[in-house]
Length: 304
Image 1 (cartoon, one colour):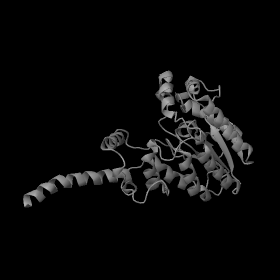
Image 2: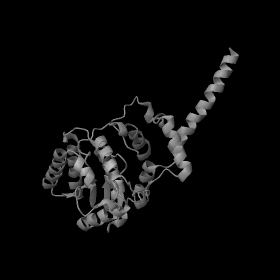
Image 3: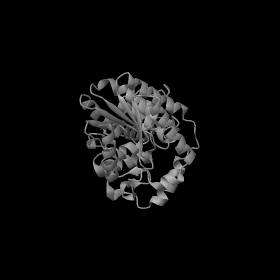
C-alpha cells in the first residue's frame, strides 16, 4: 500500500506543479486583456474618444492619429456583448469623454453571445478586465482557474510565443496593434477572402439582440452628452463580392436607422470605400498600418 501511495505521489506531484505553472503563466504574464485594462485606467483623466470593436478596429483605428486623446479598447473577436460590458464598466471614469466609436463589421449585428471563439475569451475578460460576465455559470470552474481554459497544445504555443517575443502583448499604450506591419500583409487575397467569408457566414439575419445593445449604449451616451459614431470599416473588394449582399444591405439599413433615430449618433460607412486599395490591407478584411493611418485620418476629420 505504501508503494502505491509513493507511486501515486510521484505521478501526481509533477502534474500538480505543471498545473500551478500554467495557472501562474496565465495569471501573471501580461496579455492584451490585462495590458489594455491597465493602460485605460492610467488614462482615465485624458481620454476624449474611446474606440470599441473587434479585430477590425484593433487593426484599423490608430488612436495616435486623432486630434483628441483617444484609446482603443477593441480586441480580437470582441463582440457588442463585451463592448457593452466594457462601456458600462468604464464610462463614468472619464471626466472628458466626448465620443465613442462602435465598429459595425459584417458579423457584428448577427453575432451570438457564446460562439465558439468567444467561449474561452470570456474567462479572460472576467479575470483580466474585471468584468462580470452573465454568460459564465457560477458552477463553471474555468472562471476560477485559467489553466483549465485551453488545451495543453494551445498553452505550449503561448509559452513558445512568450519566450520567442518576450511578451504576449501586441498592443501599444493607446490600444493599437503593434504587429500589423505592411510587410506582413497577406499576399493571396483571393484565397484568404474565400476562406474567411466561409468562416464569417453564419446565415443569420436576426439583428434584434445586438441592435438593442447598441441602442442601450446610445441611450446611456445621450444622458452623458457623449457622441456615438457607428463605423463600418473598409474591407477589400474581394470580401465584399463574396459576402451575402442582402445581409450587407440590412446592416447598412440598421446602422442608418440607429443614426437617424438618435441625435447623438452618426453612421460612417467605409465598408466599400474605394479610397482603399490592395496596398492598404493586411488581409481581405483587415487594414494594415498604412490603411489604418488612412482610415484614422478620415475618421478624425469627421469626429474632430
